[in-house]
Amino acid sequence: MHSRFLDEFTVGEKFSSRKASLSEGQILDFAMMYDPQHMHIDHQAAESGPFGGIIASGFQTLSLSFRLFYDMGLVTQTNIIGVGMDEVRWTKPVYPKDALRVDAEVLEVRPSKSKPDRGTLRWQVSTRNHRDEIVMTAQLIMIVRRQTEA
Image 1 (cartoon, rainbow, N blue to C red):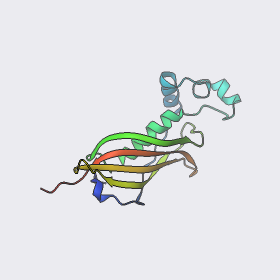
Image 2 (spheres, helix red, strand yellow):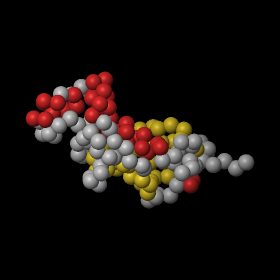
Image 3 (cartoon, rainbow, N blue to C red):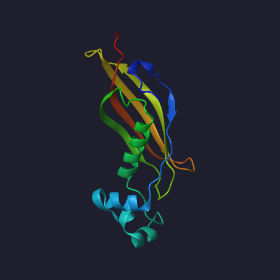
Protein backbone atom coordinates (compact mmCIF):
# COMPACT_ATOMS: atom_id res chain seq x y z
CA MET A 1 0.00 0.00 0.00
CA HIS A 2 1.26 3.48 -0.77
CA SER A 3 1.25 6.39 1.64
CA ARG A 4 -1.74 8.65 1.34
CA PHE A 5 -2.20 12.34 1.83
CA LEU A 6 -4.85 13.58 4.24
CA ASP A 7 -7.40 14.30 1.51
CA GLU A 8 -7.15 10.74 0.19
CA PHE A 9 -8.73 9.33 3.35
CA THR A 10 -12.47 9.02 3.89
CA VAL A 11 -14.26 8.75 7.22
CA GLY A 12 -15.36 5.16 7.68
CA GLU A 13 -12.58 3.60 5.58
CA LYS A 14 -11.19 0.42 7.15
CA PHE A 15 -7.84 -1.32 6.87
CA SER A 16 -6.34 -4.50 8.36
CA SER A 17 -2.71 -5.28 9.07
CA ARG A 18 -0.61 -8.39 8.76
CA LYS A 19 -0.39 -10.68 11.80
CA ALA A 20 2.45 -10.83 14.30
CA SER A 21 3.09 -12.50 17.62
CA LEU A 22 5.31 -12.08 20.64
CA SER A 23 7.47 -14.88 21.96
CA GLU A 24 7.74 -15.50 25.66
CA GLY A 25 11.33 -14.26 25.50
CA GLN A 26 10.23 -10.97 23.93
CA ILE A 27 7.54 -10.55 26.59
CA LEU A 28 10.04 -11.22 29.40
CA ASP A 29 12.70 -8.92 27.90
CA PHE A 30 10.25 -6.02 27.47
CA ALA A 31 8.79 -6.50 30.94
CA MET A 32 12.19 -6.68 32.65
CA MET A 33 13.10 -3.38 31.04
CA TYR A 34 9.83 -1.43 31.24
CA ASP A 35 7.03 -3.19 33.16
CA PRO A 36 8.39 -5.71 35.69
CA GLN A 37 5.08 -6.73 37.20
CA HIS A 38 4.75 -10.36 38.31
CA MET A 39 2.28 -11.36 35.56
CA HIS A 40 4.90 -10.40 32.96
CA ILE A 41 8.09 -11.82 34.50
CA ASP A 42 7.38 -14.44 37.18
CA HIS A 43 6.24 -17.83 35.84
CA GLN A 44 5.12 -19.21 39.19
CA ALA A 45 3.16 -16.12 40.22
CA ALA A 46 1.70 -15.74 36.72
CA GLU A 47 0.55 -19.38 36.57
CA SER A 48 -1.23 -19.14 39.91
CA GLY A 49 -2.68 -15.71 39.08
CA PRO A 50 -5.86 -14.81 37.21
CA PHE A 51 -4.32 -15.21 33.73
CA GLY A 52 -2.87 -18.71 34.14
CA GLY A 53 0.53 -17.76 32.74
CA ILE A 54 2.84 -15.03 31.52
CA ILE A 55 1.11 -12.25 29.59
CA ALA A 56 2.43 -9.30 27.61
CA SER A 57 2.51 -5.85 29.11
CA GLY A 58 -0.25 -3.63 27.76
CA PHE A 59 2.46 -1.18 26.75
CA GLN A 60 4.12 -3.88 24.67
CA THR A 61 0.77 -4.71 23.07
CA LEU A 62 0.36 -1.01 22.28
CA SER A 63 3.87 -0.86 20.78
CA LEU A 64 3.33 -3.92 18.60
CA SER A 65 -0.08 -2.61 17.56
CA PHE A 66 1.44 0.67 16.43
CA ARG A 67 4.12 -1.21 14.49
CA LEU A 68 1.47 -3.30 12.72
CA PHE A 69 -0.50 -0.13 11.97
CA TYR A 70 2.58 1.69 10.68
CA ASP A 71 3.66 -1.26 8.53
CA MET A 72 0.43 -0.95 6.54
CA GLY A 73 2.19 1.98 4.87
CA LEU A 74 -0.83 4.27 4.91
CA VAL A 75 1.03 7.31 6.27
CA THR A 76 4.72 6.33 6.29
CA GLN A 77 5.65 9.12 3.87
CA THR A 78 2.97 11.68 4.78
CA ASN A 79 2.78 11.58 8.58
CA ILE A 80 4.24 14.71 10.16
CA ILE A 81 3.80 13.71 13.81
CA GLY A 82 1.58 11.83 16.19
CA VAL A 83 -0.06 14.22 18.62
CA GLY A 84 -1.66 11.77 20.98
CA MET A 85 -3.86 8.83 21.79
CA ASP A 86 -7.25 8.72 23.42
CA GLU A 87 -9.22 5.96 25.09
CA VAL A 88 -6.50 3.30 25.24
CA ARG A 89 -8.03 0.12 26.65
CA TRP A 90 -6.56 -3.34 27.21
CA THR A 91 -9.56 -5.64 27.09
CA LYS A 92 -8.02 -9.13 27.12
CA PRO A 93 -4.60 -10.52 27.99
CA VAL A 94 -2.05 -11.24 25.26
CA TYR A 95 -0.21 -14.54 25.69
CA PRO A 96 3.03 -15.67 24.05
CA LYS A 97 2.46 -16.67 20.44
CA ASP A 98 -1.01 -15.09 20.18
CA ALA A 99 -1.27 -13.94 16.55
CA LEU A 100 -2.29 -10.29 16.62
CA ARG A 101 -3.58 -8.03 13.86
CA VAL A 102 -4.74 -4.44 13.81
CA ASP A 103 -7.98 -3.19 12.30
CA ALA A 104 -7.99 0.57 11.75
CA GLU A 105 -10.92 2.79 10.85
CA VAL A 106 -10.72 6.44 9.85
CA LEU A 107 -12.79 8.46 12.34
CA GLU A 108 -11.92 12.02 11.32
CA VAL A 109 -10.24 13.85 8.45
CA ARG A 110 -9.87 17.54 9.29
CA PRO A 111 -7.79 20.02 7.26
CA SER A 112 -5.95 22.59 9.36
CA LYS A 113 -7.41 26.09 9.30
CA SER A 114 -4.06 27.75 9.96
CA LYS A 115 -1.67 25.49 7.98
CA PRO A 116 -3.15 24.50 4.61
CA ASP A 117 -0.40 21.93 3.90
CA ARG A 118 -1.62 19.56 6.66
CA GLY A 119 -4.49 18.36 8.80
CA THR A 120 -5.58 16.01 11.55
CA LEU A 121 -6.30 12.34 10.97
CA ARG A 122 -7.98 10.37 13.77
CA TRP A 123 -8.10 6.57 13.76
CA GLN A 124 -9.95 3.95 15.78
CA VAL A 125 -7.56 1.04 16.20
CA SER A 126 -8.63 -2.41 17.42
CA THR A 127 -6.05 -5.11 18.01
CA ARG A 128 -7.41 -8.66 17.70
CA ASN A 129 -5.93 -12.03 18.57
CA HIS A 130 -6.13 -15.21 16.48
CA ARG A 131 -9.52 -15.98 18.03
CA ASP A 132 -10.77 -12.62 16.67
CA GLU A 133 -11.12 -11.28 20.22
CA ILE A 134 -10.33 -7.61 20.75
CA VAL A 135 -7.35 -7.34 23.09
CA MET A 136 -6.76 -3.58 22.82
CA THR A 137 -8.44 -0.46 21.47
CA ALA A 138 -7.19 3.10 21.07
CA GLN A 139 -7.72 6.24 19.07
CA LEU A 140 -4.61 7.54 17.32
CA ILE A 141 -4.36 11.21 16.39
CA MET A 142 -1.80 12.37 13.87
CA ILE A 143 -0.93 15.35 11.74
CA VAL A 144 -0.68 14.32 8.07
CA ARG A 145 0.43 16.22 4.98
CA ARG A 146 -2.05 17.37 2.38
CA GLN A 147 -1.15 17.05 -1.26
CA THR A 148 0.09 20.35 -2.62
CA GLU A 149 -0.29 21.21 -6.28
CA ALA A 150 2.91 21.32 -8.27
